[in-house]
Length: 139
Image (cartoon, rainbow, N blue to C red; front, side, top):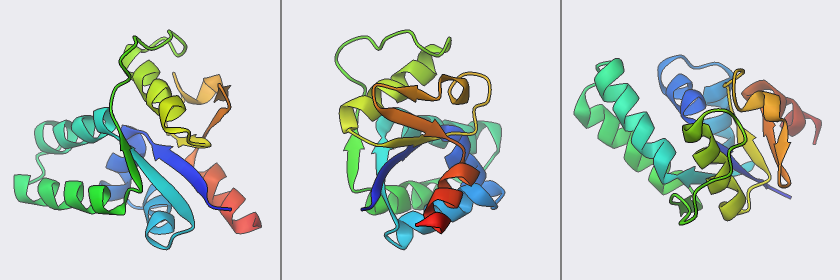
C-alpha cells in the first residue's frame, strides 16, 4: 500500500535547495512509492521562502510549483474551522489540520521544535524524511 504523505515547508525547501533525504522523498513521490498530498498553505509558504528569503528566480519558483501540483494526488486548503492548538505554532497547527482533513497517514517534517515532538495527531504520524525513507526501504 502506498502511504499518503504531506510534506511541510521545511522538507520542500530543503528538497529543492539542498538535496539529501528531503529530495529523496520527492523522488519517492515521482516513483509512485508515496502518494504526495499538497497543502495550499505549505505551497504558499514555499513560494514565499524561495522568493523572498532565498532569492530564487520567480520563473524557477513557478516551475517548482507546477512540478508539485502535477505530482500531488490531492490538494487541500486550510480547513474552515480554526485548527486545534497542538504544536505551539499556529502555522504548524494549520499543517496538522490539513493533514487530518486530507486523510494522510504521515506528515514529513524537519521541524524538531514544533511538529516532530507531537509524534502523532488523530492518526497522522509525524516523521522525519530519514524515517520515511527507512520505512520505504524496509517494505
